[in-house]
Length: 151
Image (cartoon, rainbow, N blue to C red; front, side, top):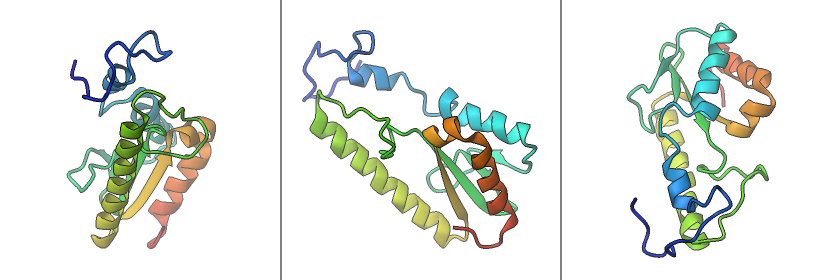
């Protein structure tokens, strides 16, 4: 396992003795059960059609409706720095994680801007929203698909 230079060897989190880096390395980029797979089940159950996954667009949106030009990102709260109060700030290597998450947020903003410049409507649904209010997430998607200009 690759370790960052500033991560003390053997430092463990309360997550079964794994370091934060080891724990986060286990989270898949695609097909994450708490975000992408949950959203896929939800859009199918709500009969939202016309979507594609991993369309070749800036930022590789999790879902896209090419005809309506709607791009949907389903973000994990920790990885994308959502201020929902659910996230624990890492104690070990805290500065590195703050910089990492700040860079992720800056990248997300650049991607949204690029997509909007290309005429795409961009939606972000957070992991916590998906878990707490799945019906509201679907209503938001329906509105975006129905409206010519949505923000």
